Image (cartoon, rainbow, N blue to C red; front, side):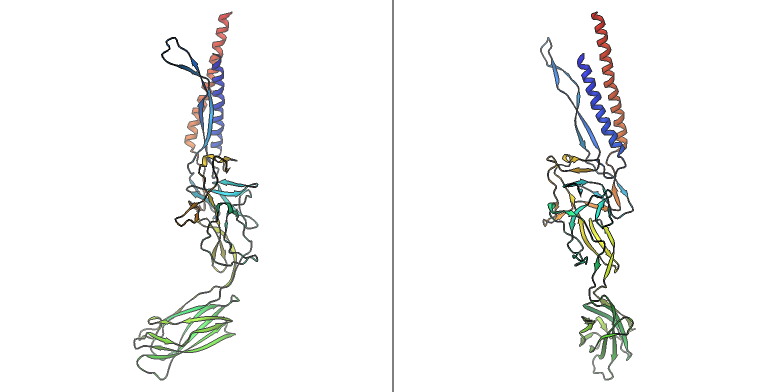
Length: 417
């Protein structure tokens, strides 16, 4: 009968622990990235009881214990956010943030750029990832990247970006022109914007004049190319050439090749055949042009896209990836050591963090990262309330067993008096 006291007490302790874990789950039902826990119970050792028949072994249990508190592996639902720096992992994987000396792992993607343009959590921990390596020491973008390749798992660093960043001008190197200048002896003009090394937008103008003397078949034209600044006050270069069309109006040849754009050569492309400049007896088509190059720009800000790329946007409309957020994976996620409801660190049970690889062996994040969303708690409220009733009843039953054992013992003592 004495054992009933200890069994009842163990029931109070285990169910009390279960209620504590459950209460923590319920209190974090609105915490982004929270991983709920289930409490698993087990019986204590049992005591053998001999019988006169001897045909079977009988035993009496001596109580219960908490065997483990296991992390729920399901993903939480995605919650809409109004910030591009808020991220949710749709799949497996953990964000890494720099803790005190070693990384911390979390599913809470509540990130932001601080006053220094570092990517951090809301409480100041730096987010880990791979830098693009395309920013010079004097904060100039050295190359445009569509994607930053994820480095080795042990080489992930704090994602730190400059507050000011310059997109250097890219001078125009080629200009293609397209138009039908017709067959009449009327001057035709086509223009294009070209960029020089000083980030100036200049004007390249082509003027076509039909030659007075024509040699059939086909037609012959003279063309003059001129580059000036935008207001026309400065002329950088002028070139003249000849253009010959066949009897159908297709371009046969031209002697106009390149022109100087304030120190930078620009290749002039009038096309071939009917792709480019033509002289067809049909309505004149207004000219158009295709050029490369871009003016310089200053940093507008940073954002994060669905591929976990940190994107720098500039005042000239250009963009470039400058970093990539890492997603870490573990052989046994339930073996991670819990630091708080949303943050964990690796342990001997979890194994070392790893990266997934694609078919070519390149490291990849291995899951979809959704911006403008956060992952909610993965604990189900309905299930929690049901479990709360069960644990409450079990706690009351354990207390009742202690009361019953006490009453029985009191009665036995009175009988022995």
